[in-house]
Length: 36
Picture 1 (cartoon, rainbow, N blue to C red):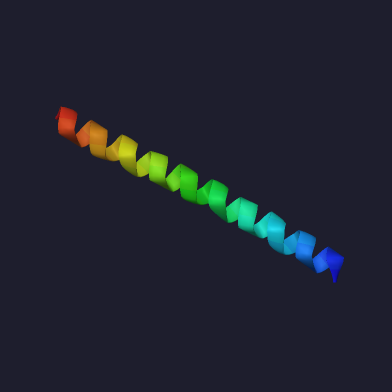
Picture 2 (cartoon, rainbow, N blue to C red):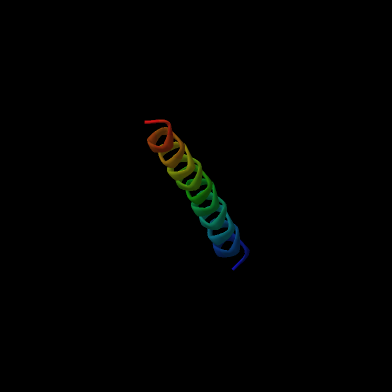
């Protein structure tokens, strides 16, 4: 049970990291479009 909980937390952390990167990428793309 504890092992499963640890895995779920790892997955959540992983998803949050991906979400942060996607958001940063979108902000970057948006900013580069405005400079054109």
